[in-house]
Image 1 (cartoon, rainbow, N blue to C red):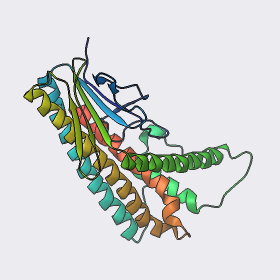
Image 2: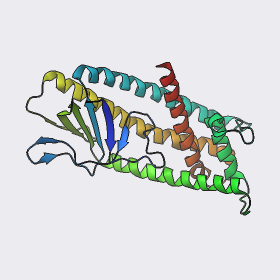
Image 3: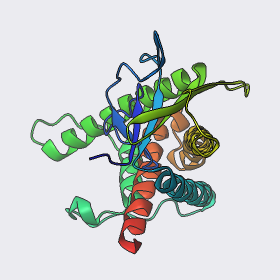
Image 4: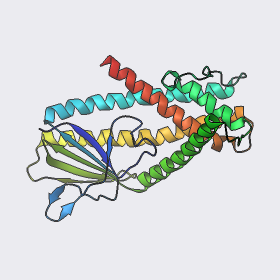
Amino acid sequence: MTHNTFQLSGFVFPGVNEDPFGLWDVVPATSGVSFGVGETSAPEEPVHRINFTTRDEGAALLATKQRELQDQQTTLTQIEQRLAEIGQSGSGVSFAAPIDQPPEFVTPEQSLDAALQRLTAPVSYGLFDRKQQAEQEADLEATSQWRQFLEQVREMIANYARVETAIAGTPIGRTAVGWTGDFRTTWIPTVTAADMQVHRHNVDVTLQWRLGTLRLVGVVGAGAANVAVKLGLPGGQLLALPAVWNFVKDVLKEWRKLQALKN
């Protein structure tokens, strides 16, 4: 039985391997689909591959995904404003969680506050302070994941956006889009005008996602610059980047959970 699938291969989200916007299911790179004799997609580059059960269902689903991406861009704007307010406030971040509060009840603001406080707290190497050791290791891992994510985004910018659409397992079209706006599309011989419209809509949604990912990086960078004012440390912006990145991801995840409850 055919299912609607949104799959992204050749791109890794370090640590969680989960799309922050919830659009794509991240899967291992594959050999691609064939659009002609001896012609397959390039597996070494990120490929955005969608398969719909029917054309009409696909068109409706793409419209829904596009609205969700637009709503999440609005959420990014709100996050950006909140981080700016934190930087401008005179009292600092004030969302501290109660001691030993279960992780599932800790808000993104409280997690951000705790991470920033750890950056300014004296480092302890006590063998018996397991909680602090675990927190330090988590902060180091977040730093590593942020750097890996930036590297993935750099590679994404360097490569074409490769977008593939299929209906009931039959490929319709494949498009390679450069950042300068040049398009190269390959169609199957039996493609219809309605099929083309669905694939073009897929390309639009994919490009919207890519631009949203770049904006996410920008929001993290600007947010880190704002909250770094509270740190008063040399290189505070660089130190704050992983904590702010986690904050942005957590807020977007909360938004998706809220939408799931509404639906």
